Image (cartoon, rainbow, N blue to C red; front, side, top):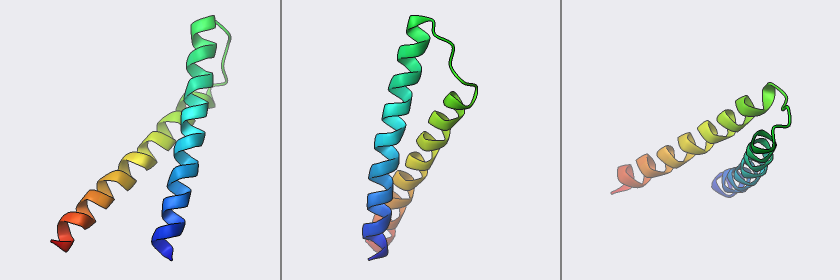
Length: 64
């Protein structure tokens, strides 16, 4: 049950991070000013996803 909830949170975080990153890079490319928190949010979501991915690899390896 907990793994299912974490999987859903990971999917939502991934989609939100991709959408935020797309908006940030599009605004930067067009020269539109962006809020200072936006790149930090992209980095936080990316870090969360990286930790989740690493933890899943670690747990799969520990099971074998």
